[in-house]
Image: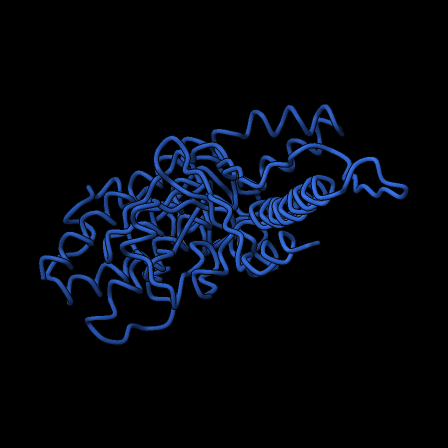
Length: 332
């Protein structure tokens, strides 16, 4: 009686649910690490041709896992729901067909008659492609393996090969600084509305101060990675402009004055000293700051102030130094 149902159940081995690409040809992926769950996209053709089944890396935290583990939570939930509906549909349709066949075999005009009824019409057994989330604007082309991937925010590692691009990491750091500065008016307005003007001003001032530190640390990290091929450097040497410039002059034949004017180096040194006093003296000016920065606009005991213009100047100068160093080191 239930041969159709037996055949259907015997033939269902796997249920495949297709996943749509976005308008740019990228498919959604998500880090399987619970503490991360970073959403990103990879080019669909590169996923087939460049990515390996054995390992994929998270662009944000560099968690490593086989390619089969990188479905998004939404994709997994959707696939589970669709697979269940498809199996239920196959079972329902098989029962419907069995009922029809059973009823057709029954003799009419007999003392006892039997019939079988299955509620509902034929149900769909075709999977519906899982829709992609909207396209991500920042598309990255890995310099190591040529894989293309897209992100929102920042990414440090290529998901196809795990490569950490020192140039991209530095550029991302500067981009985050610019984003902070650009959004200060929005942040101030939101906090003022939710709390008060005093809280808004404290938050915005703190945000500017972190930008100075972020820039110094980003350039320090860039220099440390670039300098590896030349040997060991003194601890935290690249937090100090004069010492790090001397190290580069010994390593590649030119120091920072090769790319920046003396007046620009003086300004950058002042910003470095501001970062130091913010980190180690809560931003309160001491005699050492005045001596090292040659900043005559402050007296001992005053509180350091960081302006948007200073931050943008710092990122511009650091970017020029970074581009010069990268080109020089690559050239050998």
